[in-house]
Amino acid sequence: MDKLVINGQHALSGSIPIGGSKNTALPLMAASVLGDGTMTIKNVPNLRDVTTFAHVLRVAGARVQFDPAAHTLTVDAANITYPEAPYELVCKMRASFYMLGALIGRRGHARVSLPGGCSWGPRPVDLHLRGLEAFGAEIDLEQGYVVARAPGGRLDGGSFRMEPSSVGATINLLLAAVTAQGGCRIENAAREPDVVVFGKALQKMGAKIEGLGTETIEVEGTDRLYPVEFVNASDRIELGTFMIAAAIAGAPGEPIRLTGAEPDFLGEAFMNAFRRTGAHVEVGDSYVEVAAPEEIQSVSITTDVYPGFPTDLQAQWSVLLTQAQGRGRITDTVYTDRFKHIAELKRMNAYAMVQGDTATVRGGHPLKGAQVMSTDLRASVSLVLAGLVAEGETHVLRVYHLDRGYEDLEGKLTDVGAQIHRETYDESIGETGELPQEA
Ligand code: EPZ
Image 1 (cartoon, rainbow, N blue to C red):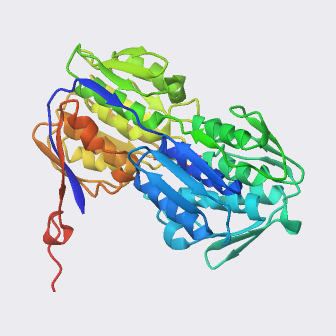
Image 2 (tube, protein in one colour; image 1 turned 30 degrees about the vertical axis):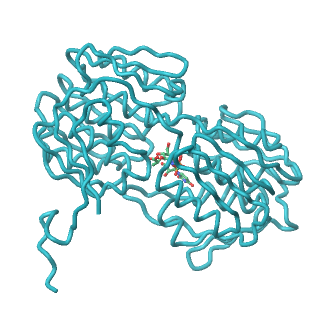
Image 3 (cartoon, rainbow, N blue to C red; image 1 turned 45 degrees about the horizontal axis):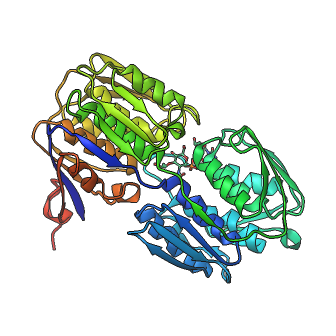
């Protein structure tokens, strides 16, 4: 098992490259199933989730090659002979559920495992299934698998209004709708940049889609899609994460430059809140420069669907609030119980409490290094941010959560002056304070 060991309070300075978007790369990989040939996707991050999805594609019959150094993935989907996605892979990574829409779109039928649990939730898939039925699919549940079929091999088409707006359901429905016989309409569709860029890839493959980035998406079905070469988006959540790192751990007055960025993808809510902290921000076409302020102002936020404040940045924001003057609140309206990191931050002397869908964090109490446990991807990166500013040494355990969504985090932070390195450890010998089990 790996952990990250951070020696805190070393000021950061320099520049950090932002990698390709995890949450856009995964739907792009699913889209490759729709083209009966070889698709090339560039700017793909070297992450555990990408590796997992590559296995999912191989199970379906695709040939997948990934060059991690070039961040380039090729998928030969000429022979999708096994329209299934097995439990052992879907339970590892929820986005594998995109294979449901992709296999219906390509083969007219699919057998995909329902996703497993998550460290917060519930994370239902009812909108995915009801939307596919609205488009004409027949859906059965058999031993934990969704068995879906388009009678006659292609969906008829139809209209579906989702409530709430769902990123994953919008992606799954688009994957199935692009080869329907008729037209499909998605109302209250997700407007996240991940969905828009993915939709543009489908358009480049020959899909007829109108309304990307708006609440209503119209799709006119087409007979087939063609594999293309496509450049993945930059990761907006990694960008936001490093902006927060710069604001709390940057050398005062020394801007940190985040390159290869697409700042517009963060949305106004986050940028406005970030500026209200007093951090000095300069935004260019493909970079963001952040200089830490002398004093961070506490800014309360409420998450929402895009262009609202991203739920994937609320854990990181709670660490910023520990460094701010005064008291701030974080309300997550998307996932109302996504606060498992707060208990770990309190072990680092954070003054925070959770009530329902809101965490309240009071600044002015210096964080102290400790052993802390990752519980999910964004919670684990918030513990790393806390370690950067804490007094002494912090051990962030179970960083396999982190490796799902951040490529070479310790390398990028070391390059700007952080004292952070990776170590392996064995949880069975009481590292987490648990007594070794009797042999
Ligand atoms: C995507 O998850 C992201 N994952 C998540 O990022 C992100 O937190 C989330 O969107 C919200 O932005 C990927 O893109 C791979 P949703 P997804 O369906 O699609 C409810 C990360 O850290 N809902 O938009 O699963 C659901 O309960 C990950 O990178 C239904 O009710 O999220 C939630 O309240 C974590 N029924 C809301 O919609 C459904 O059928 C938004 O969920 C589906 C969703």
